[in-house]
Image (cartoon, rainbow, N blue to C red; front, side):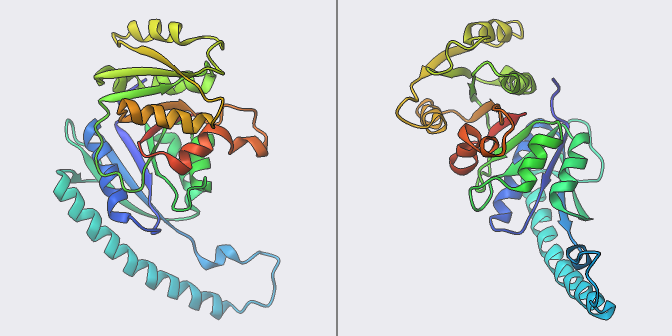
Length: 285
């Protein structure tokens, strides 16, 4: 459990670029941390299988040159947006962190975005993943959650502020949920309200909300519990409705708490959050 100092956000050009960068900078400023904005670029050569013959090398080089030219133009535009937003948000552009002051750095890296996130996420405290444009889980999100070993904060694509004063914990007694709570302790300690939300279907699972309240109290965090009924609707939908009614600014939960079978891994609450959440969600696998 640490206060995040090293943050990372992969960036694609699928729309809402300004909002996504601004949201990541807001999270970074909240923690006085250092943000690495990771923009990955893949060479056309990577998409040509090694066993394919007859592809002229001049054609490959021509494709690479065209991609590089387009990427450079796009990068200049994105970095200009990044620079303006850093200036507006009072975040210093620097490749290294500064004490008691937020910093951010732009990185252009060759490779698949998901693989880079899985690799570099291991040396970050927190990975910021904006919701996908399609509302479906991406390879980048899966890599961040399942392979980095670090907490992920899933944020709405248009979120530009971060002030987690009222926090809700989605609790079902799972190992993943316990990890998420531990990672969230610095945020919970600063919150004005902490609510532990438990579905009536999970209320008998151990450890229950009562033991979680005791655990948080040892960290000087006062929490209350509330159950919600999800019998007539998906648990994810009921949970988000409860968070909205309570005016929650952040949701803390375990991710992919079911058995790792392909049909289940993107099902349930996690899938619903990826598609429908309107508040940031701190997740841990």
